Image (cartoon, helix red, strand yellow):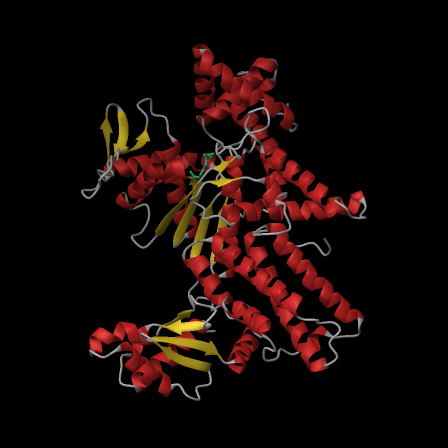
Length: 588
Ligand code: ARG
């Protein structure tokens, strides 16, 4: 379906044309003076110069042409030349009927869907997820769902950090604790055990201890580097041990991501492209893209128009070791070969901006991608505590994702129990669902690139621009619908009607914006647009609800019209929270 603003602009454009003016002047926008009108058109102001005429004269002539037009109930030309518009209730009703009978509520799906890979999550194996990773997971998951809803073919890849020095550190840490393990016996030729020699809890102790020690003890660091080298070069015992680290970690990661409704299609990592690196390097050298500088192999990515420093992209260090860049480039190569994506979207913290600029330029220059391949990087801001500094635990440590979720659930549980008679068990079940919405909405409602303050009290509040407020609204609608059924009503038989009040019309107009909003959330890769929309929609609904006694209405046609409107509102709200990556409970 066309967007309602486009349809109204077409009507207006035709009126301009009929009055002898350029149809392009007929662009209609949502009113910025809702006290005066619902929509407006400023085309007469814009046309005044071109036609050397007072804008009010143009506006009057155009208004004349719109007398009896089916789309507008009211067209008023006001000084100095604005066209103030009110929509016809019948026209709005027809539009909503169209939405109701469309699988995507009027959102047009592309004729040629794009293949899109979203690279998000980015967890590092054997290290606990910290709050920095929560933004990547939460925003990336929503972007994936928005692109999918918009009708594209989308693959989400977690792109694990599973190949760098941290793996050597863990292996060295394990060796110190259990030197007798068969993985360290160079003469061992048998099968390796299938059970991992550590649990996740142990792994989580091993990495920080090894990492801390390597910072003070140069010899220890050299051992870790040696272990990394051996692992990357295929020493059997190291590979077998690494596989255990990976398995134990991934099981734990799946659980953690799962608790946030985050799911990946691909669980690939840096290690997966290890074998592609030698050929890629050879190609870059042969084609003359890469050259040796100070012992390292680099590709220049500077461009003449650069105003800031743009260092070359390093492909191999002077000791021949691959870097973060190298695996990212090889991953681009692999993705192009296997999936032929039209677009790759990366999510990381915004401090990686220069890094991604280098990698993307290098991929283009060395023709790892085609000129049409769209490479997008979305850098997100920091999640801060109330003190404006990166969010920490009470004792100043790095806040882990699990702790953050647990704390939010606890606060949600407390709020749900407050002054109510509800069993702990039920309150806990509700808190599980609502806490995820509180966390995610708190994050997603901000523009991704901005820092934001994690305010557990505000995020879990049932009032204001919060996840719980949206869920309360949905639950309220569901409960009215349930009561309607108890009264013997049949939802399938209800029929939308022309708006009976201003509040009802406002709700209907807000619903009619759905396709335009979803389209721009996709085009601009901007989940916060979905949040802003549902916040307005929830407000419009609640206003209507307080204004209208639905269930006691005696006129069955009216009642049925309202119920049908509730069904549409519920469906759109639920579609939106689904693309944001959370869901609503049945009761709250
Ligand atoms: N593992 C990285 C980190 O923790 C994030 C990976 C982002 N993705 C990428 N393709 N580089 O910072």
